[in-house]
Amino acid sequence: MSNNPQLADRKFIIGGFFILVAFIYIARLFYIQIIDKRYKEEADRNALQALTEYPPRGFIYDRNGKILVYNDPSYDLMVTPKLVKGCDTMALCEILEISMQDFKKRIKKACLAPNSPRKQSIFEKQMSPKTYATLQEKLYRFKGFYVQSRSVRKYPRPIAAHLLGYVGEVSKEKAAKDPYYREGDYIGISGMERSYEEALRGKKGTRFVVKDVHNKEIGRYMDGKYDTVAILGKPLYCTIDAEMQEYVETLLKGKKGALVAIEPSTGEILCMVSAPGYDPNLLVGGKERSRNFSKLYVDSTLPLFNRALQAMYPPGSTFKLIDALIGLNDGVITRESSFPCAPGYPPMGGHPRCHKRHGGNLVEGIAQSCNSYFSYVFARICDNKKYPKFVDGYAHWRKAVMSFGPNTKLGTDLPFDSPGNVPSVKYYNKTFGEGHWFANTVVSLGIGQAELNLVPLQMANVIATIANRGYYIIPHCVKGVGTEKYLDKKYTEKHYVEVQDSTVYRTVIDGMQRCFDAGTGYPERIPGVVACGKTGTAENPHGNSHAVFLAFAPRDNPKIAVACLIENAGFGGVWAAPAVSLLIEKYLTGKVTRKKEEERYKAVDLINKKNLLTTESH
Image 1 (cartoon, helix red, strand yellow):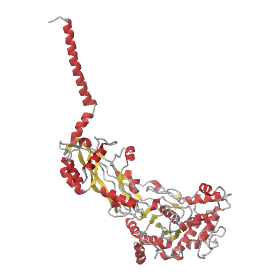
Image 2 (image 1 turned 120 degrees about the horizontal axis):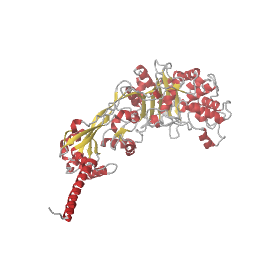
Image 3 (image 1 turned 90 degrees about the horizontal axis):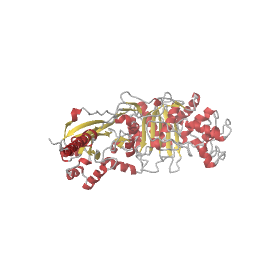
Image 4 (image 1 turned 135 degrees about the vertical axis):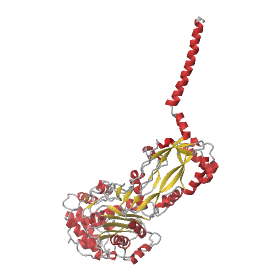
């Protein structure tokens, strides 16, 4: 053995070098296998795939258990750009009926942020069954692609499109904020689909599958040990009566406007129609949906616009009911109060004219819809000596009006409802100058004109409040969510208005009954039903007047309250009252006896024809 110290040092150096190299290799392997997950993920990605299981959305039923919305199977073609290697792109383009340029654009889009080449993205949405069947046979040739099962909405009846709403692709902003969604997912866009999205959507699941080198699925990973089950969306039980909804939609065909019917005792919306409407099945599918939406969007009649919730109209003479209630409640008028029924409003002049001499009391003033009468009522309310200044009286009037719902969002379970408008003191001070406006300046408010605006849902809520003699329950369109039939407590609470005196309501309701028995609504009286109503002709600065009619029935223990407005149609008793009275008769009796009236009304197309107005009483 050599005792050379230099040789011994060399052995240690060489041995230490090999030990260091071995340590580096071991450390690197440890880092790759234990700490750095990229290589494992890359290997797993080649053999394993995590597929999202989308639950079917909850069904929607009407109040009688009839299906309004269910699901049909649908399929999206998904792509992971990083795995698209050796793909038969020409064959895929041929099946999907797209060009090679389209193919490249879609792949590029799938690679851009917030997507990435390693993430799954939608390549083709909602393929037709024929396309899916053809693709499924050849899917092994398209590495990096797979089919994702979905479901799309289906409507057995082409009704209630605005009320039910539709489903569309989630926005980028929503997907970024809400971890439940990712780009390409579907979400409720409008109507009940939007309001009850969380209940309807269910909960996603995940399925892990093993694939071979040909991208063909060969089984579940670990026999599904790590899979999670998708939870079905909850069903919605609706307040809508499908038969009534369909019936009103046939009545309003060829007309622009809205009709809302409410069960007064519960606040349940029995039907809500915005006309013209559209078939909700048009907004289902991939390419077809986009084409149909574009056509509806540019349609001059605005079929996508929900007039029942969003369109603000002057209520016209129907607003006189609120003035009568406030006036009686304040003690500034009585049942027997009489006012001059002459052209104009003498102390002020130049205001809406009344062409007939009506009876000299409040009941007849309501029944005959006397403009002059209610101009005086409005002035008495605002000029009440109880208040030191006119603006204080006006503020009191406005506060009482708002308690019935105008100028507020009612809190309904449907999105995008407009608040309407009851002009404030601040607004008129700015318009006319503080201290420079009085009852004669804004007297048109007393007959439902000027800046006063309500949406049809608010009009229906007003008439439901009168039917209830002083309270309303927030109008809503769902009776219960899920099998437990859950309902938010706010849809069972009573909201009391400023007027609570039962004798006050009795007087006003006498006038409304008189409207049907011998007043402006006389032609639309309902056989065997004691109904109470009020006509209105709302002046419109943009064209012909709007026809308005509010009613409830029967008088005692009312079952239905209805508001109807037909745009640019003229007199309320001619074009809005028939729809309301026919609906009430059908709902309460199960049939319509006035067949000629029904046929006449259905046959009229006010959108495409002109000069159909008559000179009958408003």
